[in-house]
Structure formats: C-alpha cells, structure tokens
Amino acid sequence: MKVLVIGASGMLGSDVVSELQQRGHEVASPRSKELDITNLEHVAGIALSHGTYDWCINCGAYTAVDKAESEVQLATELNELGPAYLANACSMAGAKLIHISTDFVFDGESTTPYETDAPTNPLGVYGRTKRDGELAVLAANPNALIVRTSWLYGPNGKCFPKTMIAAWEAGKTLRVVSDQIGCPTSTGDLARVLVDMIEANIYPGIYHACGPTVTNWHQFAIDAINKWKSSKGDDRTVEVEAILTDAYPTPARRPKYSVLACETLWDLWIKPMRPLDEALADFSAYLSKAH
Ligand SMILES: NC(=O)c1ccc[n+]([C@@H]2O[C@H](COP(=O)([O-])OP(=O)(O)OC[C@H]3O[C@@H](n4cnc5c(N)ncnc54)[C@H](OP(=O)(O)O)[C@@H]3O)[C@@H](O)[C@H]2O)c1
Image (cartoon, rainbow, N blue to C red; front, side):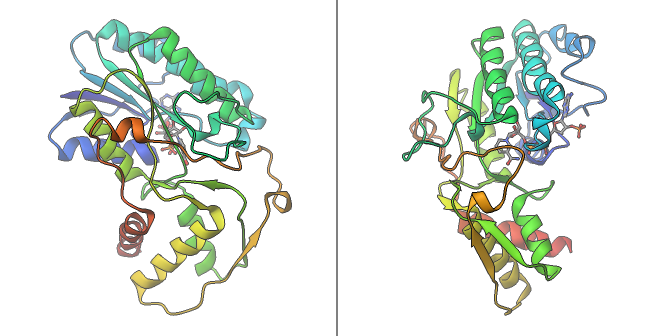
C-alpha cells in the first residue's frame, strides 16, 4: 500500500514510518515545512493527488500540554484546523485516514476504563483542541478512523522514561506524582497496531489503542529506571519519592484516571500490545545501545 505519514519526524510518526517500510509498504513522509497541514495550498496537493495514497496516518500535532495553555491559537491550528483540512483532502483524494488522538479528551473522573463512546470533557487547552480536532475530522470525513492513545514513549523523542533515566543518571532527587493513573504505550507497539489496522482495512470509527499495563507516573518512573539499570548491570538502589498532583502544580490540569478500554480493537483480531515490563525492556536495551 501507499501511505502518507504526517508528523513523520515525531516520536510516533518515525516508528510508524519504520514499521510501514519493514512491512513493504510505500511511504511518503514529508516534513512539516513541505507539508504543513495548516497551509491550505500544501493540503490542496493531497486533495489533487487522487489515487496516489491508499492511506494517510496523521501523527502530526501540537503536543506541548502545558505550553498549550498560553498558545491556544497555535494549538487550535495544529490540532483542529489542520486535521480538518487534511480529513477533507483525504476524502477528495480517496485516501483513508487514521487520525491520532489522546486520552486527554477525558476528564479523568471515571474509575473504570473509558469506552470509545464515553462522553469527552477535556481539562485543558491541549485536550480541548484534540477533542475539537476529532469532531472536525469526523465532520469533514465521516469515513476517517480516530485512534486515541495514551502516555506515549519511544526512542525518537522526548518522553517521560527518558527524562526520568537522565535525571536519575544525573543524580537528581526524583519526586513523581503517584495519583494519576493511566497506560504507558510504546510507540513501536502502537505503530505495529496502526499498520495491522490498515492491513486489515478496519472500518471507520473511534478506537482506543494503548498498552495493557495500568500504572501511575511514580511506578512508571521506578520501572523505567530499574529496566535501564539492569540493561547496564548497575546495582544502585532507585529512590523516587511519591508525591500528589497538588504538590506538583502545572499550567494544564491532567486527568487523574485515563485508562482507555481497547477491546473494540482487540475484538477485531488486532493483537494487543505487550505488557509494560516487556516493552520497557526493549526500550531500555535500545537506549543503552544508543549511549
Ligand atoms: N506524546 C504522548 O504522550 C501522547 C499521548 C497521547 C496521544 N498523543 C498523540 O499522538 C500523536 C503523536 O504524538 P508525538 O508525541 O509522537 O508527537 P511529536 O513527537 O510532538 O511530533 C509531532 C509531529 O507533528 C509535526 N507537525 C507539527 N506541526 C505540523 C504541521 N503544521 N504540519 C504537519 N506536521 C506538523 C512535527 O513535525 P516537525 O518536527 O517537522 O515540525 C512532528 O513530526 C499526536 O496526535 C498526539 O496528540 C501523544
């Protein structure tokens, strides 16, 4: 298949490109300078490319959760306006679209995993623009697929486990919130799921796709550092202080519980992702080879 990947330089997009290439698909991966989804002239090129692409996977987004609180216009352009242009262009070009979204569309008040049709109620600008982006995509292109994911980490970007490992290596005192619960998701595993989805020609709709392990940021930090230590043969003790969200104020509020129910996808014979322990072991092995 011929697949256009938007946001190919990003943490998820780069793994999506590798997965597609490894599985023999033809990939176009323009940088945002060449194909800015907020630029109507750029996007018109897709609209006019009828028959060129079978699929488009949009991994492009404004992802700076706290900064979004003061950059509302930019976040809106990247997360709502651009995806709507893209959805419309894909519809005109006859390319099916997967648009990536987030657990931050929910308010975190639930105590059971969020189903795909659970009411959204984002707490901040990032979540709101992503939710509005979902609605805009589906309004412009009812045949689009929305895939919500959570707590991404991967080799090609800034992510929580890398930050924790670097801080620990630097001898910093680590204090991490323990009252936000969610599911870490390896970008490599999510890329595999996304490519499985296009190969299975999954029907349009909203899907949830995240790792199967439910945890909190404090435990995630400990697990990441422990895996890193064992990949280096390091036997130092890891100490991370657990704190509450109130003790770590951030510009954007975050959902305290954002576990996504993924069964809709697994029921369609898409293989679930690996447990955190297994995926983190690979991630740490990769990081230690890269150092
Ligand atoms: N990170 C997480 O923990 C997380 C959690 C849940 C959901 N998500 C969602 O997952 C998706 C991927 O996230 P990520 O963390 O991999 O993102 P990322 O690393 O921040 O990458 C964002 C990508 O968007 C591209 N981009 C920015 N502006 C663009 C524009 N105007 N036109 C086209 N592309 C543009 C960037 O390209 P340039 O570098 O060329 O500007 C970059 O490749 C996003 O939809 C995000 O909302 C992320």
